[in-house]
Amino acid sequence: MNEARGDHQTLPPIRLQPPVIDPALARRIRVVGLDIDGTLTDGGVYLGASSHEGRSIPFELKRYDIQDGLGVTLLRECGIKVAIVTGRVSDSVAQRARELQVDALAQDPQARKLAAWRRVLDDLGCRDDEAAFVGDDLPDLPILRGVALPVAVGNAVPEVRRSCTWQLARAGGHGAVREFAEGLLDARDEWHGAVERYVASRSREESAS
Image 1 (cartoon, rainbow, N blue to C red):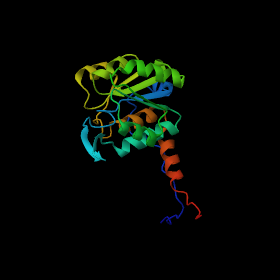
Image 2: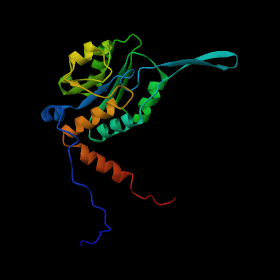
Image 3: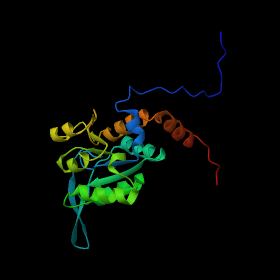
Image 4: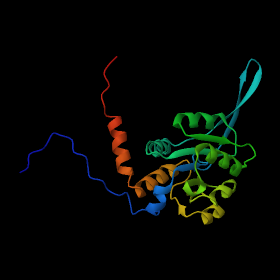
């Protein structure tokens, strides 16, 4: 009978599933654009107001998915730039962008996303044929029709789904961006390595100061 070994053994790489996109296309992607409402959130917006020194101060709350956030982190750690492009202006979005340390944030109150996306690409030194975009609704269509990899979340409207080559199973705000990150990195043969590096970085014992 084999004796139990005490040393840690890393499991061999496995594919999550057969690649849902062409590996050559996946390896070409240098930048990923993400919508907010309905993609990084479930599309719900909570509006309220607080009072300060007799003045009413409006505020807006959104719900974000933690697993989506880790997916964004792993994309960036694999060298893929991540940009958020939204048609609303919100302090909540700015805070989430800072938390995720995304490479670019564009908020356009008129939902003119294509012009904002063009500025993002110029700033990052990337092109549409090196880009993926994940969206859910009509304001995302001008961008989705131009990028190399257009992606629809599970709750996307029919017009968006018909324009996308990759249709995710999960809904926005409920793991859709994580599903996308896993699928893209898996097609690039980078998912297993990204996971192991992340786990290793959280397994080191830091010396007490």
